[in-house]
Image (cartoon, rainbow, N blue to C red; front, side):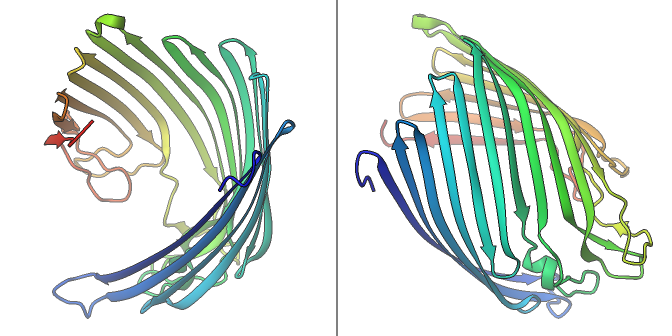
Length: 358
């Protein structure tokens, strides 16, 4: 709703209902059977005020979420948020974005989460940036109330708290663009399922502090043949390095405990892609990804710690339709992303798309 030349209002309302009927062994529902229903109401009112001094944002939101579950019980909680933001762009060289989110949760009380984003284009093709933000993750109803033979919830859990920051440089000139950056994330009251020995059920606690930092780099190239339109080329390369460390996990008595979710994030990720468009009709896309994980256990005949995946898509397009073929995991690599579930080997898809009009 454009109320006047500088004031824009955006109201929004939403409702979501979900029912889940879960049977662990279909032929023997008495072993484990859980039925739950969730209802979520959400209402927002966002306002933007554009002035010569910059843009101001102000908004309210309210969310009510409830669950009726055979295993998790009947629970609900309300969440109220008030947020403000200020944006300034000066001569397309300097940008500032500062804001804060004030939150009230009926289960956890009041909290505030500030954020700041700065950018400066010091040369025509180079821009440096830095940002900082805070946030939290609320415990799920499963974390809080689940009761099962091997997992038991903890109604005394507190929200996870996060502080994250990033800084870097971006480059953009004609056919080339890229960026390089460093990022940092610190989490406290980290929720981790743990137990003192294998005879006890898993139980979530606010045991851990988690520190993650790393670097990221990406470069992309684009070339078009101009008016002849015989071919276009797009290619890129990106790399991310992660270093994650968690504090020592121990119970209230100081005894060390076993963690269910040992840090298993990617340590190295190298991605490459190339795309070719010929005569505006034939499109060939190639991608490759190398992954190396932290603390990946060995499983016979499967790759967990490191693996290389390659995918391809080729498509032929006319005005109203296109025929395409996808080939995923071209090398038929046998690997596991997380946990113990094997991922698919090589598989192919043939498809036909038709547009009624363009």
